[in-house]
Length: 213
Ligand code: URA
Ligand code: SF4
Image (cartoon, rainbow, N blue to C red; front, side, top):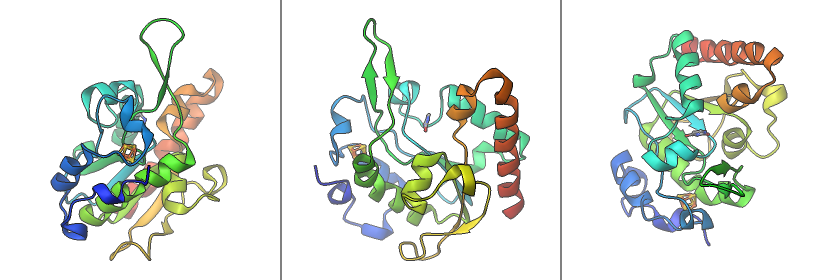
């Protein structure tokens, strides 16, 4: 597998999100297309001022073809609302566009797996093309996978979250400011006595974003 680059539309950097979404349906840039149901491309207004980038679609997203429609999406919607961000104005996508999972030992449940470094690199051309087309003012990286895709492999969300950074200067004509925060799934997975605090930190980071728009 050679990565997504050769599946991008011929229109290059002029491609709109619709062209990109259509082209991504046939991507075989890494091995993940084989077992997943479909490509889950980004969704939302094509001229959004804010883009949110998750990790990889989950089970529900794989079945529906839409990003952040499962439990993590529910929490994200709630956090955005509390921070004063209307999801309808946000373009939401993922660093990797096909579901990665391990089948449960019994039954049909499929357990989410983190994408590998090489899968993140393989899929990155779609993300850069989306950002180039949408041309947002601010990009939020939800969790380490998105942050490492856009801010580099040495970026640490634990110590560098919540700051509006300059990034992607060499790759996008009008580089956005980029802020990394926790992934909503990490909030859901936090132990009972830490969940509320983790959720509060996510909302605080999103308020910072709302204030920057
Ligand atoms: N988690 C993600 O990172 N993305 C989704 O779309 C859903 C869950
Ligand atoms: Fe292509 Fe990304 Fe899917 Fe891999 S995960 S096949 S690079 S769209």
